[in-house]
Amino acid sequence: MKDIINKTLESYNFKGKYLDIDAINKLDIYFKSAKLRIDLIKFINEQAILIIKETSAELFEEYVELLRPGGNAYTTRRYAACIRDLDYYLRYATYSMLAGDPSILDERVLNGLKETYNSLGVPIAPTIGALNIMKQIIQKQVSQEAQNIVNLPFDHMINSLS
Ligand code: CYC
Image (cartoon, rainbow, N blue to C red; front, side, top):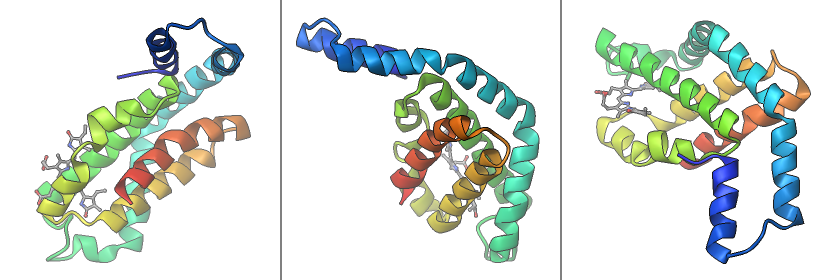
């Protein structure tokens, strides 16, 4: 799991260089956004259950067939797995928002996920749909500045599954 600080230091250490102005500027922006990131993830943590509820409601409204016999979220076990997956996405997204880096998502969520989903018949398009819905639900409730922070993990997960 990496954040923007250790990723930058690792790269400059590897080159054996002092941090240059690019690195300093990047870290300066990151440190200045610290309070915003903390407030944002605090807000998301408090709203997590509602965000997941709303995401699943919109997802199953858009893809009703998932809940019908033959659908991937049909049966309580699969429905619960789907809600659990939504919770994973949201929780790891908050870690990544705090870190300012998406590598946490690669390591903990995305590596091998597409293959697992394909082998279990979990449809990718509605999963991407759910990530977009979740992103928008959060975007609607936060400032413009916070929206940029929210974009990073969701766009990263969406791109990785696409
Ligand atoms: C299953 N989701 C799974 C499985 C994994 C994950 C590994 C297979 C094992 C299991 O059932 O638990 C995902 N596991 C993760 C992730 C992490 C992890 C992300 C990182 C922390 O440890 N079905 C739908 C919807 C979608 C869905 C579109 C919800 C968005 O129709 C999800 N995932 C879904 C379902 C299953 C699943 C239904 C069970 C599939 C089955 O067993 O038939």
